[in-house]
Amino acid sequence: MSYRSRDNAGRRTGLGRLTRMTLNVCVTAAVGLLAPTSVLSAESWQLLLTHQLKEQQRCILGEILFVNEVRIGERVGLVGRIRCSDSREYDFEQQQTNQPFVIRLCQPAVC
Image 1 (cartoon, rainbow, N blue to C red):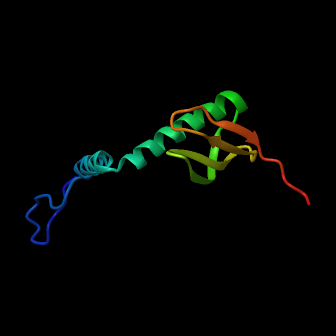
Image 2 (image 1 turned 180 degrees about the vertical axis):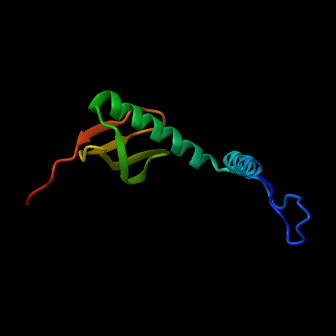
Image 3 (image 1 turned 135 degrees about the vertical axis):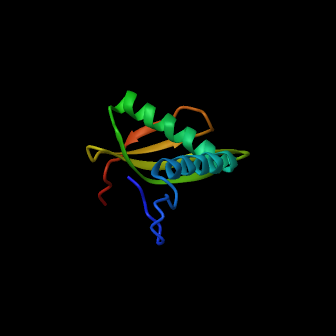
């Protein structure tokens, strides 16, 4: 297939589909390399949480409802809630980076 320019010279104009995809991959990789460490560490805690939910609770992570960083002295912990693909909700807590999460089934509170 050939794209014709306005002068119908029969030459291709613009970037081809493969070239655009390659360019997008390169830009995405460059942004990943230049990303701050907090963004990169965020991915590691999500991977750990996803794995731990799957192994311990038989939960496929559907959505992270909220997550907060909590300072405990000089350490930074995480507290949050997730929803599994089957609608169960769990609260999670991590006292320190790269430590296992404490995962509890979220029970509705009735007052």
